[in-house]
Length: 299
Image (cartoon, rainbow, N blue to C red; front, side):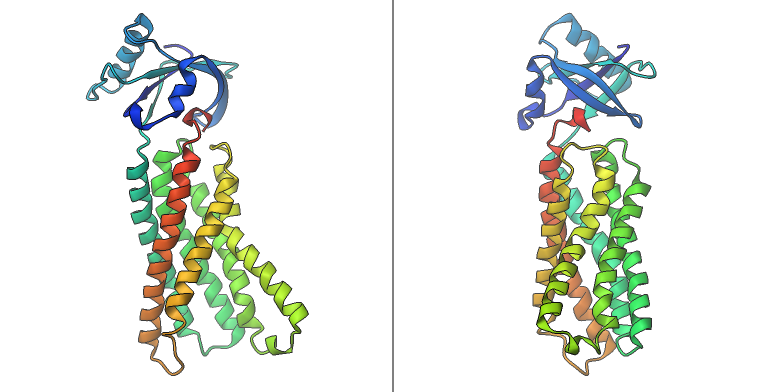
């Protein structure tokens, strides 16, 4: 259909967004890298409009079945800078499947990425503070890049139009900021004893806040172009990293002891990293589902 977008709603009984369009509603649609305004409505069962829309969908996806029970939403575009001919968007959001994909991918990505700072921290634990800090920053940049790549693998299908490279760079930058905060105690280790509580406590609180917000804020700059209410992602990631860091600390602190071999230190750190990664992935996956439940025509 010229100037229209056809949206087939699979497994409609498990979704609610399309019900909004039982009556015609205005919307904004992100398509091919730009925003379009228009209106959307659900086609009436057994109507000629539905048959035409289903035929166009079937022509685009000849192997797909289009049950007569599947609602079809027709989005009529207006004010476009370029004509759109026969554009078709299929919504395949399956919350449980998306959560599982996100959990397994992000857990693997963070565990693999965290291996870099875990190994680096064990190797440079007796090095000069400046050397140790620089090494940890580089390792943190690697961690962020790996995590961003694994997350982008999931988001490229869940958030149409988002470029994976943008997400990876944002995640790497956020991780670099977080590890910059973590490197401060390494650089100032010998001088922290001289800090008064009135200086140390506020500095620790501010540093902790920046650390928790860093990745979420960096990723928000990318996500905000595709999802309404993307600011919720900042608080979701902050909560997830707080939970993950608490799990990591609770596991590693009793086990790490002075005089241990490098191999044992690395093993404890990676195991703690796995628990941290799983916690972070579970929490962010939960919130991702809810954030993406914003009607997909707005993203």
